[in-house]
Image (cartoon, rainbow, N blue to C red; front, side, top):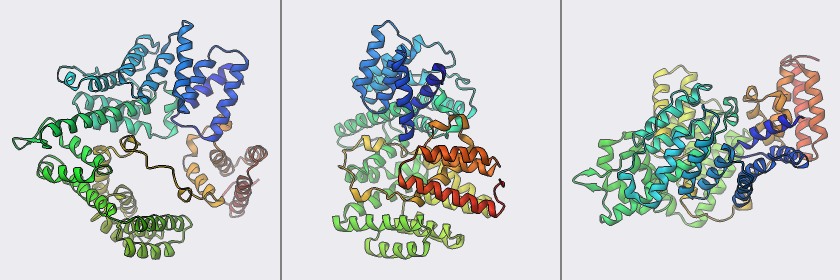
Length: 508
């Protein structure tokens, strides 16, 4: 592999938010090659690896050493910006992203939103009154990421919402980009959208902090002359939703006192969603420790039975769990099991019943309903469910670790909470990778995880390329020492032989 190829692979892998164990091994091998060659790019790539490991001090030290050599390019300042965001040093984040923008050589790299978000967060952190006079509008470049139309559309929409002051909606648009599959080649864009999402999370949390300080000084009231002060219904409902997992009493009081304002100014579906979530949280808070442990034990067992396709036992266990704990989540799991059994009529009734009282699994319940309605050609019902899902997805911040950032850690994970890894569970994961196998590139085979490699091999058999598939299988088997993974390889071979016998794969 040439040095150019090494750096290309490092750039691609180190632009991800996280790395698998297999990808880490690859990165470390590539880094050792650069180090042994005394390549001047080693420090920069090593700092990126430290960053992904959460070793911000080590990453920062290397980047400052690079600066001392006189090299002050985009990657160095952008790396320091990412660290500043992670460490909550928002004034430094604003300085570094501005410097990165000043020295960038790629005219298509648009940092306008990142700069504006950093500036707002920095000003909020220093003095909230600065926002009253500050101009945080961004110039919208409608072709910033024109190579990818979906990324470009979401990015432009995020800037438009930001300019309106709708920071939560803007943040949700960026979060959608971070969830796009590998086929969108996000890792090839030298801009970490997940860091921008982190910065926007921090902005939302700073706004929330300032808001609660404000209502505290206003005798706990957010209403002035019958109207919300300077906070939108969306912001207030999000603040209440975030507070449900912290101070449920405060969340309930704020919701109750302003419920009529929400009915007038927000969609009834989102208001109803928050009301149900408060009721659920209050119910679970009043459970004693033993009952809550019993609930978690039931849920783990039910999930295991559904994964093993033992749906009848899962439904029976859900009934016992619901009877003993009174928690509505079991209604959702019954609906899920019925869906898997293809008893769609019963599943629909069960899931609709759950949505009448529950919210914790609402999006997932809607997903199953949407799938059923599409299969049955029920266009109107499918459209309505899709609309509600989209509304909740765009209205609330509920798909990152923003809540974990805003509450204290609950301690170490219990050993019993860890999922049991079996040959069957690994093969089910391979099934998931196989669904997206078109996004995997054969030339990057060595950089992929075990499950991704097995998905590629399975696809080669299906595409009547058995010789290459067998060669890659031997290659994977030779590098695999884990007995469980070797068992998976053997099971895959058996499965492929059966499919060939049935004429479903190409014959050798």
